[in-house]
Image (cartoon, rainbow, N blue to C red):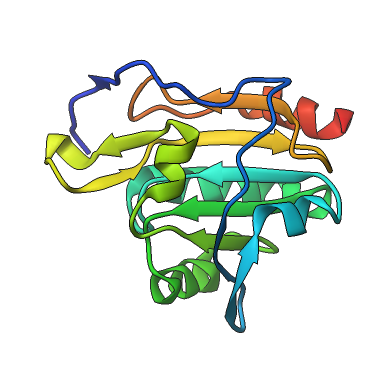
Length: 167
């Protein structure tokens, strides 16, 4: 697969020690979806929030395959976030993201709150989530943060895993 690597503009995202913004969006699991807040999830324990491009995009596929292979959902509540609809999330959950749930943010409002919005292929008015990972504790304090600086870009999975082991 050939593609150009594109440097992304600076992101103004939550950093380690910051309180991650709360939001409420449809949260999709294998059976149904419901409006849930991020704070309702973190109240139950640490959450690994994984922002990714729309479902079906190769970066999302690679990230979720790696998360599945490493079985992170067995160690922490893994929650995805993208512009894809709940129906599209259902398809992704049928194929991968074992044990995870996915927030649907089709208007990319959460991406804007988190400073990780990205105009899809430079097209004005079509915004997706830049790849990002935030490990949040019970108070939504950011314990680990990684945000893509180019497209495509992938996290240091070993560093994420070490952060999960530390919470």
